Image (cartoon, rainbow, N blue to C red; front, side):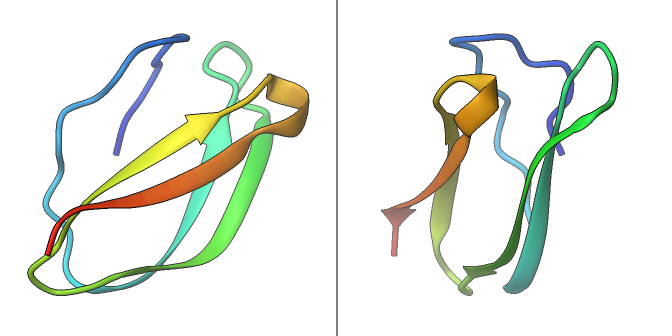
Length: 68
């Protein structure tokens, strides 16, 4: 959904159907997989933001509900 974002950058919102998603974070320069998180559940009628936080060696995803 988002591509080649640097540190402290953000993408726009994308519309996705409700369901379970697997999210893979890749190094923008090399394409190497840095982290994969399986089973992120997005619910109908919600607006969510997924944050990628931390240094490349220990990335984490935080899923926030912006609107229910």
